[in-house]
Image (cartoon, rainbow, N blue to C red; front, top):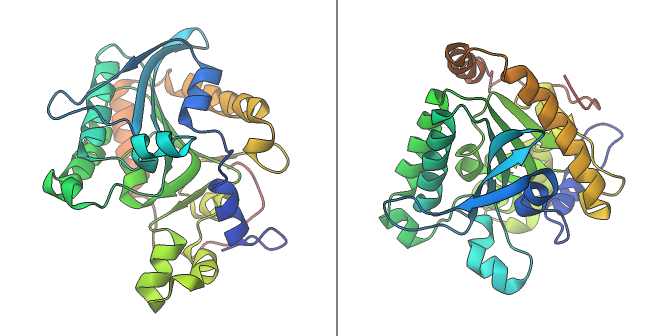
Length: 279
């Protein structure tokens, strides 16, 4: 649903999918120093759709995890358009566990239309891999902040978005399904995607009002792609504020509060959208 006086939801969808929009690696490279990228799930293979990098950020070590779509057609094919296979979620869990072992906080940058729906992903257990990842996030004894930077689609996004704090860029989207898929399911007509976008309530102000995200991070006028450097600075400030607070919290309290946070979400409530940018 669009905010009264704001842009239609479908326009936000188009901005979230803009081909020049900064991707996870763009933000990681802008925020972090001394990046050391890590690969593989230690079971099957590496998933190029998931970037995992240990970096120095704001004077501390941080583990960055991000779904990477790819910029050129060749890179998009190599990155599978940001859609993770099972090994991508197992890789995320492995690196998150590594971070927790050394009390290194985790920052997850969510940007995917969903998990890969192909037969080979099903054969290798995509559903159980996502479920395992979700369970693991609830056990992780280190601060976790997730930021939806573009598309947050279905369980593919949730596998990286169970966090102590969930942020969302102003023109990002976060939903149980993409508008095209929703229109196909409800009306058997993907052409009704704009109507579906309005009904899904996938925009940042709507989700903030529903209590599903903790802060909406503003973007440069026209969208993050208009000024990527400024977009990175705005995200840097928001992530830093939340992590500074979380790092002062006892690990046992982190785990308990993370669990309570998601148990307390009222998925049946119809929120009233507001135009604010933070709670």
